[in-house]
Image 1 (cartoon, helix red, strand yellow):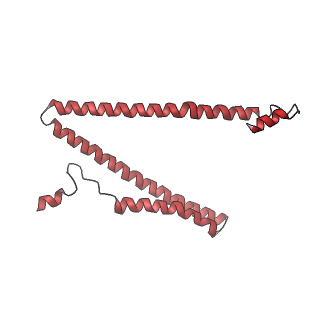
Image 2 (tube, rainbow, N blue to C red; image 1 turned 180 degrees about the vertical axis):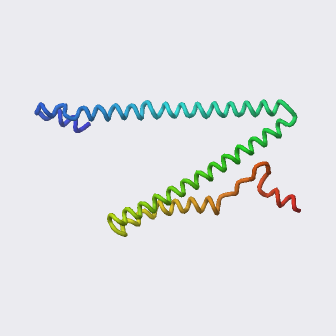
Length: 160
């Protein structure tokens, strides 16, 4: 904006509207991105999630009310959905950890070749983040229940 004002103050006729095209393009692009695209996609995504949750709750209500075993089937369905969500989260953390580890190794190697060891150590940051994600997934995260079983401690209760 300051550049446009300074170009208006300059009396040379070639520079009055020399950069107006770039300024107009960036202004229209910013308004289109932040004023139209992002709010519309956020609104559409929230409507989709709301509609999905409504259909899921209506289906569960109808199954529960339809038969005596409907409540048991609904509870099993909710457990299965929670199990699938937990699996998706763990798999996402695995992929994210592998990607972060690869990025860290790549940054270390690239910066090591370009500048030397002191700057290459900046790649250790994403490398350690990826390693931390993988350590959490493989050693610290709660195990996923097997399908059709109750909580993880059911086996110990059945033995005793």
